[in-house]
Image (cartoon, rainbow, N blue to C red; front, side, top):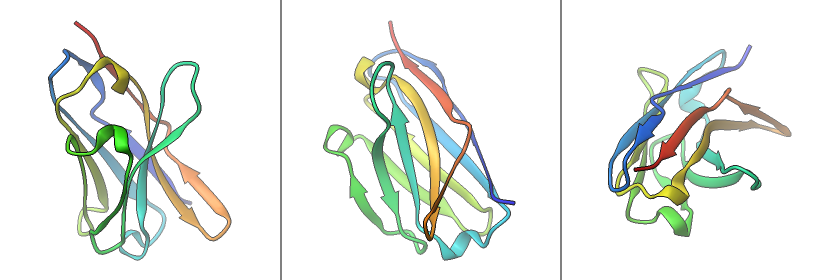
Length: 116
């Protein structure tokens, strides 16, 4: 079965950096585009970045442009989100996502807290 397992979240000071990882299994990773979403407290889940199966970034939320980078290692079946210049508005639970036809798959999420 499809499994997505995020890791790398934590507490970071404003201006700091974090790199999230998403380990994928149960499907042919190199065949699918992947995305990172996030959900801040009291807000709807929002799309952050999307990458094609061959590594091209095709969507970047305006709020993270120039600060976040999405990448993937198809050999390791792993998706990454490098986050820099973090600010408190980046606080939330970050989710890895893959869409297969009409079915979305999500990881359990990893908490990112940006606070002094």
